[in-house]
Image 1 (cartoon, one colour):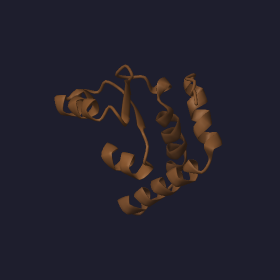
Image 2 (tube, one colour):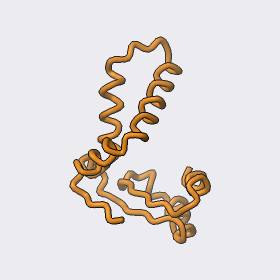
Image 3 (cartoon, rainbow, N blue to C red):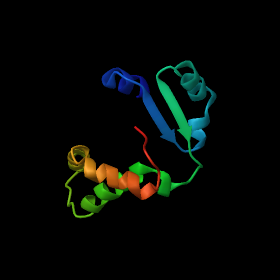
Image 4 (tube, rainbow, N blue to C red):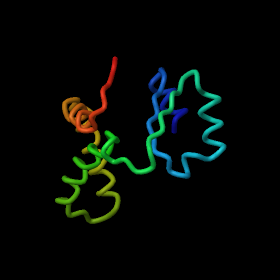
Length: 107
């Protein structure tokens, strides 16, 4: 996924993740080190939903998902993709989720 994202974006990637055991495998850590020219990784404590911008994004999606009467998993998948795409084009929502964390984005 990271290689594909780097290829599609054509630029460096900043990866912010928690210390879930899966994220600490030797293979993944070696990958990060081998790709340090285009990949910067920041590790958060294992459980910090208040520091994760994506938790705010998922909260927005789940709010709408609770009102969906889906007939099958495919319908749920399409709805989630649609809502994520709508959020993508609302930088104010994304910025609001970042502001909730109290973190500052320098740029």
